[in-house]
Image (cartoon, rainbow, N blue to C red; front, side):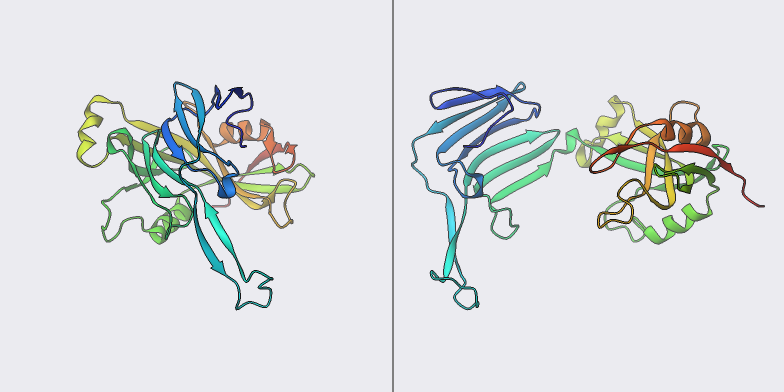
Length: 275
């Protein structure tokens, strides 16, 4: 039987606990399949709590026969049952609504569910701006409606980004290898509400995020050269009044995390660009 939390409490057919995930959710499930839960059950999330009530089995999981008789490895049975739980109910989390209408196969063809982002809970992107080495405005791309001919023109955006004045720094990777980092200041703006609910932005402050985009001249971190690869680029949010150097120094002073370990890098200095 699958756990709900790290600290489940059970009383007969009822299991409950405090949940770090805080949706509004009510779902009936047949159990079975890869879920590994053998009973029909009713699960609810609310107010930071989750509870599951095991029920008598009145509905069977969804399943289909997969024919393998035409393969060399068909086996003695010539196939197998592909089984998944049926679920009915809803889940609402951070403005994302899911409605479960039957089999949950994790396959877009056979899964029976519907979902949407509620437009009165969403932020819509307004612009993406670039700033030069002094923090002065260089270029802005305004978001355009879906279907607009030049919407999200990646080629233009990439070309402009390369033309935007950047500041280059050197640093030593965790293994002492000296690497260059090319940095640019970016800023993005969002307004509240989408579609018919754009008017909600009249009553809520806009959201603006300014960050330092960082591109490395080669892979960084303990996993460079491996199948996973090291870090080739990243970013850091800017503090009020910060420019490239202060932000990159702060980035270097942080402890960084790779897949299997933590590591540090050392700031060296700014690389002066030839005119």
